[in-house]
Amino acid sequence: MRLSETLDLEPARAGLRSDGRARIAGLLAPDALRQLTGAISDVSKWLLVTRLGEKHLNLDAAAMRDLPPAQRAEFDGRVATAARAGFQYLYETYPLYDKAHAGTLEAEAPVLARLFAFLNGETFLGAMRDVLDAPQISFADGQLTCYRGGHFLTRHDDGVAGKNRVAAFVLGLTAGWQGDWGGQLQFYDPDGNVEAAYVPRMNTLSLFKVPQPHAVSMVASYVTTPRLAITGWLRSGEDPGIDM
Image 1 (cartoon, rainbow, N blue to C red):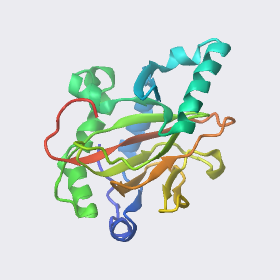
Image 2 (cartoon, rainbow, N blue to C red; image 1 turned 120 degrees about the horizontal axis):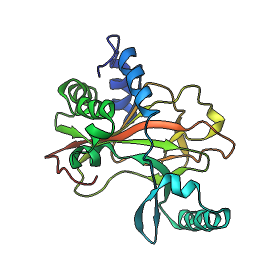
Image 3 (cartoon, one colour; image 1 turned 180 degrees about the vertical axis):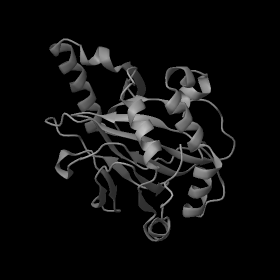
């Protein structure tokens, strides 16, 4: 894995300074991007994640897709009820950080293991420290995420005590995404208005300082293309090597 040789960080540096967020197009070199997208197509052990009863759930995504319609409708109804009451999410994930620290990532997905090592290498972390003016960044966590029709992430700010999150990142890995398909990374002003929205773009890194109110809008039910991305946080302090 390697960064693009033509990468220009100056526009992102200016955006982060003024608004606390920015996008970096063409992050990875073409050969690295080809390796990564090819590896993602081989991932089969997705987890469907959500919250019910104030508890995070990791569910077998394939099994959930195969539920009888009545059972799936009941589940979706519970998810929707929780979303109306507060913070909620529904999407699929392949947890790079957890698998790397459990020692299973290399055997399951060697290219993704190289990606995770790259995210924690000096080339990437050094660039992120530079563009964010955040020398305290010491490691990155991350997950591969997949948003299908009906998936979403409601408004929150990523500020969690003890996590030491300096900034969040989303590396888009879907080509040809349309703005009216949903799945946009949205940012909010103090009055709750959407003041900026990022449409997913292939090989484009969305980067924003924590805390900052944001959400991922619901992917439209008619969309058959999955919204794929590597998402995570740039963190300070010692890597605990446990669940994010």
